[in-house]
Amino acid sequence: TPPENPLLTPPSHSTHAVLGSSRAAVECVIWLLQHGVPPESVHWVIAEDMWFVSYESMQPDKYVNTAKLFWTSFAECKSLPELEFALEDAGLRYRVDSTHRPTAFHGVSVSKQEITQL
Image (cartoon, rainbow, N blue to C red):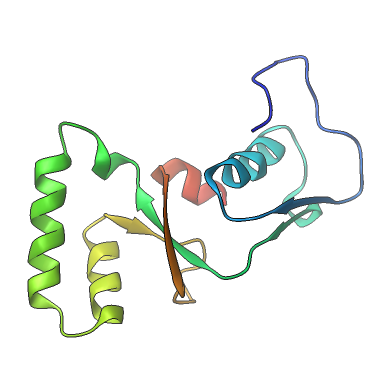
């Protein structure tokens, strides 16, 4: 994760590569974008698209409702894709590209604001 230093600016390269799908990689992509690097200059290399955990749904005051929504969806859905989309509809999961179904889940949490930046 890049340090939180307001004097630090990204290098002036024509492209920036971020490798991996960890929370640190997500933070690097967001940091580059927030510091003026054009989106077309950021190349995020991941092995596969993944589902993200909704940060908001994991807050202490939301956790009981999150568990209830999860287990209700789990009981009602007949397939894994149906469950994934039900969790997304309930606000418990996010994906970067809404036109593509992710093939992995790593448990990385992001906020709604962060997912819109990606």
